Structures are given as structure tokens and as C-alpha cells.
Length: 333
Image 1 (tube, rainbow, N blue to C red):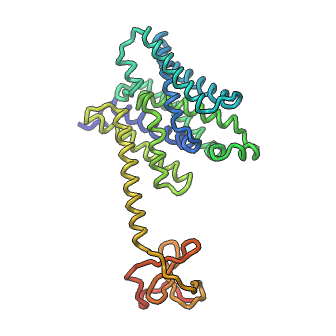
Image 2: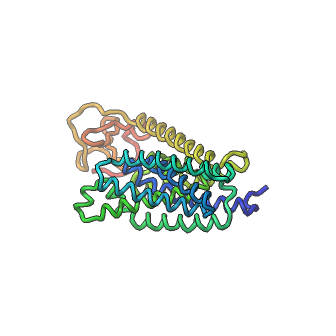
Image 3: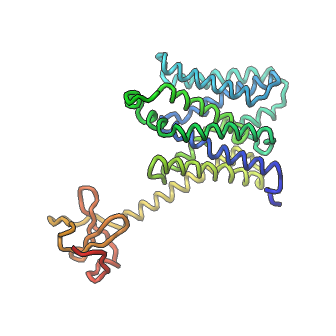
């Protein structure tokens, strides 16, 4: 059966697409700030918010959002004003949030299955109203992240320099914390509160292996996030597995595959050239040797060998097809 013919699967895949794009774009700044686990802390606090919603009969998504945003603000205030460092504030949020959630859940008469859906995700039960909320929150996260990406990156790299440059460091840190809280709530029905941090961090870890710039890393992170979320939902439908766990396992598989491919590529690159023998001659446009274009640089043909500049030394590029003096030349001095 074509799963796109099923209304609930179309809603699930669209929700996965939104979360797959939004979560890694927030996570990239958390990785830069070495706060990769803050998503876990937000998830614990959001659990308390879900429990409040279930206990009072209100929408759990809204109560979770309020709880997570308040926690984000509290963490930044403690980090800014108090002597407690960020790690301790994070620990307070972890333990306080989950303890309050456990106490409130114990007083609730709701079915445990409903709470499990928030903890581990239940994307196949996403309703049209849930999708609207997810779309609005994800659009907000994307818009703010893309508009402020350069400033958020500057603050993540060096707060003191950013402050000296006139950037509103406190406001930007608070914005990032709130974006993280919103992202956690957006994704709790897709991957679950206990797994959301993985979707924020793993695509970024994979993107850092293949990206060559910050903008490129962000683009790759969003791509890997979408592949993980949509692919995970697709696989979970046919395999009969929980969507949240399947999404995270696919993200891990992508990371391992990228690591292996990058490692193989580096080994191949190392075998393509060896250190050149020591000689006093330095090559250049007027050295008298044949110049051959080789990718993004120029090799010089000298005594049957191809020499290329690498930093402060010359390497020998072993390529039998062009070590012959009769090989095609790109230019001659």
C-alpha cells in the first residue's frame, strides 16, 4: 500500500519534515557552545509541563511550551546573575523537572500510554490540529534562526569579543535558549522528550564531517535531519517500530556511514601523494619546469616526478599518467 494515500501518514511525514529541518538548525549553535545536552534538560522540564496539562485537563503542548520557556529563561538568568555555572544550572533543571513530572504524573488518572507518547514519540497519532501547532512553532524557529544565524554564531564562538563588538549577547543567549525550548516542544510528539536532543545533535555531528564552512554545515545538518526524520517515519511504518527510536537509529547510522566514508577518503588521499625528496629547487611560474593543473592547485613536473606545494613544503604527487614528460601540459613558463 502506498503510505502517501493514508491521511495520517501524510500528516506524520509533514510533521517529520518540519522537525527534521528545525531541530538541527537550533542544534548547530548548541554544538558550537558545547551545550549539546541542554535539549535533554529541556525535555525533562517539558515533561513536567505535560504532566500539568494532563492533570488540569489543558492542552499538554501549551503547558509543556510554557514550562520549557520558563526553564530556558531561568537557566540564562542563573548563568548571568548567579555564581552557579551553566553545568550546575543544567543539572538543577534536569532533576527538578523530572522530579516534578514524576510527582504530578502519579496524581494523574490519564492512561500511561498517553504519557509514553510524549516520552518516546507517537508521530502516527499526529492530528490535523497537532500539525498546525507544529507548523507554526517550526516556522517561528526557522525564521528566527535564519535571521539571527550570523549573530548567534558570533556569540557562540566568542561571547567577550561579541560583547565588545556591540552585539546584545544576553538577548541572543536568551533567544537561543527559548528557541531550544520551542524546538523540544515541537519535536516531542515526533521523537519524544527523551530523544529530542539526538535529533538536534546527531545531524550536526554528521554535517561537521562533510561541511567545509558554517553555512555548508548548517545546510548539511538540515539535510541529514530531514533524511533521518522522514526516513525513520517511513521505516517505522513498515517495520512496526516506534517512530522516535527509529529516527534516532537512522541518524546514528548516517553518522557512522559518513565517518567511514570520510575515513576512507582521507586514506585514499594520503596514498595519492608522498613526501617529495629533499631538493633545493623551489618551483614557480618561471622555474623552467612543466606546470600541470591538478584539481585546485598546480603540480610541477621535475625529473619524472610531480611536485606540489603543501604549506611550507613540497609533496610528490604520484600519478603515472602525468609523470611522463610527454604528458599534456596546462601551461609552460
